[in-house]
Length: 301
Ligand SMILES: O=C(O)CCC(=O)C(=O)O
Image: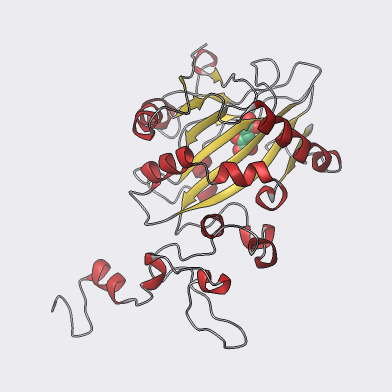
């Protein structure tokens, strides 16, 4: 069975990005301390108790999933703004978008007896319309319990981000993201992966925390999972990551239904400083960049 590379919280973002470029995934050991990992489990366990099981073969019939983790978990909020993860996200996605935002927060508890999830590429979420040369996602899976081959560790196919879309992996090409609780699997949106089968008698608990391009639709609707009344309690940085900021010039502004503001950056709603991208509300730059037209006429600039 192939093995995934393990690195530490001291490894530079550029070294990590080099591994992800080659293999599609990497494991950062001990991103959470033991006490943070315990707290994470304590935050999630009661919520998972009352959650319904999955209803299809992708979600898993013996698997429980819960979201809105920025609203519900202090540790998830801390992880979302972890400097090392944000550096990796910027390095991977910053080439394609002036901003990066959170796409998904989801705890995944795989119960004993669950089969393997179908192997997939997360970029398929966007319908296959985005060319491969544009990476759409930095995905992460945090181990809240130990992840083992037997208990359902995420299965990953190293190198498969470079394969043709139709190529299927052979069994000997599939790695298990085995890691200790508190570690994190970090992967791009193109590598083939999926939840593993759990043949033990204890559940496996992990948390998906994904980032995407600022101009792309998020997988989780963060404005409903974290409405302004909840988001107002967070830092401006976390609010921006949720999407309460413009994703690119002229993208994601809002108007107050009572007319208090027009074409404003969402940062203004919270009295936050408006970031550079949000200040550029004029469409002129965008038109110029994409057509060569200016107000005076084509290419007159
Ligand atoms: O549970 C896992 O290990 C992976 C889950 C996953 O890839 C997904 O649900 O998209």
